[in-house]
Image (cartoon, rainbow, N blue to C red):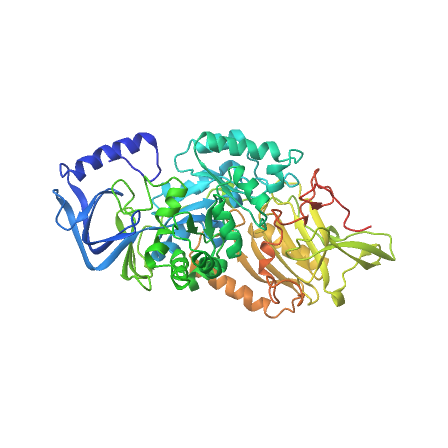
Amino acid sequence: MPDDLILNATDEVAIRQHLVLVALGKAPADRLLRVGRLFDAPTGTWMKDAEVVIHGRRIAYTGPRGSWPGTAAQVVDRPGLAAVPGFGEVHKHIESSHLTPEYEAALVLPHGNTWTCEASHEFSNVNGARNLDFWLTARRAGCPLKIFPLPGSAVPPTGYEVSGGHFGAQDQARFMAEPMVAGLDEVMDWPAVWNRANPSYDRLWGMIGATFAARGVVEGHAAGMRDLPGISAFAAAGLASDHEAWTPEEAWDKIRHGLFLEIRPHSMPDIIGGLLDRGLKDWSQVAFATDDRGASDTLKMGATDYNVRLAIQSGLSPEQAIQCVTINPARHMRLTPWVGAIAPGRYADLVLLSDLATLEIAEVWADGTQVSQGKTYTGALPRIDWPDWATSSVKLPRALTADDFAIPAPGPTARAALLRPFHWADDFITADLPVDNGHVQRDAARNITKFAVIDRHTGTGTIGRMFWLGTGPATTDTAVACSVAHDSHNIWVVGSSDAAMALAVNHLRETQGGWALATGGRITAQVRYEVGGLMTARPAETLHAEMETLYAEAAKIDWMYEPTFSPRWWPGFPERLQFATLTCAPWRWVLVAPNPAAPTGLVNVQTGQSHPVVW
């Protein structure tokens, strides 16, 4: 049989021609797997004493024990286990695990996750030109995790940013010619969808149109959208889904207006309970989305299996919960010929459970072979020597100095624009700050520190710098920098001194990405994300240990916070600043790396208005 690691039309025909013969017993199979029970995801029913006939990486036949007329080279008997389809992620950023795909596979496969729709605007914004090459490399090397990339609509995230990629209609048409590509990643720039004057209007609609032309799926992102006119407009645009619902009311309105609902764990108990209370009977328009989850959290909580267990605890039957990570997302993403069910023609991906109620996983099979025993990964882990285009992504033309972070003003005081983490107000905050030696100063007594975003993609190294409220180190001569800054993924740094900020950023320049904590004139902790500045090609356990060292060193620092601010923000090491640079709805004023569309770096992404940081 042809190699079907990567789907293509020619091989697909040959594979299915041979599977026909195996199913009829006219050609031998590689493996016959017999189980005590088999879950049929399309009907939500169980078959007792079932057998699954496997040839190559695919299923050729399913039926009652002893019903297949053919012969197999190997018979595997698991009478005490129940088989359910391999779990799928309808919307996930693998980059947020901070592991390259081969190590992501080793982490999540023992948890039942055998396929993922990769929302790929993270790496796309680092190296858009090589985005598909990156996501298909591990699979081509033999990795059993199927990754179906969705090229990013947010490349760049808005018309007021410059990143390491720029996708338009022609790019999306080319992407959609690749059979592994399922559609267009979440459309987040809602102002660019409805407003013809927005600089991204034509680019976004071009990508949407190219996706429609290829009969792909256009994924949505409707954060903060709760009014019925807005929801109706969103659905009318052809944006097929939303994973940003926070309340039962919002989820109910969106599903009733035709959106496919992708529920994330943090809102799952409330939303599932609310939908049950409202009498939802057909859950086929619902799936579960992990979205962003670091490797450390996956080691502690689990992967897709955690989502399923939480859904069961929230009131769904095990069968309904399993459908939400198998057939439902496969139907939505139009991938049912290959995944979503234990059925002929599909990849032979099965999760074997020793207990259904608790979703206790005994074994996981992928591509027709066993890849885990209990929680231990036993499958293939290809060694990939990631090339320079993946490992040389921090392009700063020179080492920075303290002067690069100074904000000049004539004095003796200056009015300054302030932001704070997750600032969604219509206007920025202002404060009067002292000026010393021609430079505007921080004010630790009022929790005002300095924050900067540095362009790491274009080679210009432009720096957006301003003052932020209620975040960063109160400890003197301290800074933390990171190369993960959703969604453009430039470097951000926050610090109590300009010299410490320069030291932390220069360390990331040397290591090609990750975290750097600087205090007292030296780097006290680092975490390496050497691939794309987003991921590491190392095991999850190694990354976790490095993160624990960072947390331990960070615990020695006094961190600012605003106790009366948002429940989403809390004291301690400001790891969530990775997401505080987002520019999608419902954000308004943001700090980006300065560029012609946002010359000061401070820009309102709803209107395009730019503003000085001090005046």
